[in-house]
Length: 161
Ligand SMILES: [Zn+2]
Image (cartoon, rainbow, N blue to C red):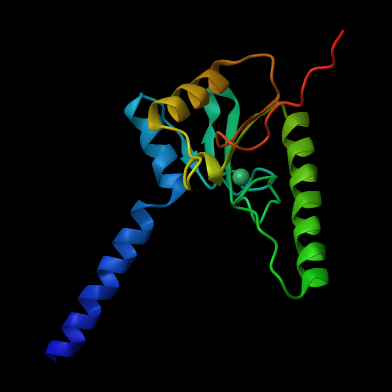
């Protein structure tokens, strides 16, 4: 009986720990603390966005870098079954693109927050992440904004003119 209790307790602790470190929760806290109100996992929108800010006609996706093929240090391809993984991940990317197009045509603005901006050695400081997200929500001219880690997607060198 005691061991069962202990097992139960450790399971509860594991559940609490993993849910509170979820990138989605982190972003939601940032928004909430700044007074933004949102819906989560709205199933009637293409791609089931993680966070929906209806007032700003903005959806936020928090993307795992591996699953959505981000060009960064977290998206390391497995060593085996490369064919399988390549096909699977390419299908994810193709589906993402279809969802983005559908959302844009419905008049939604899209913010993509990549996992590497939230965790790992190149993550953004919370204040920086927050200011980028809030700026993206307020931005009227970008249809899709991506928020990356400090290391990924560096701008290509500008052509010398
Ligand atoms: Zn990434």
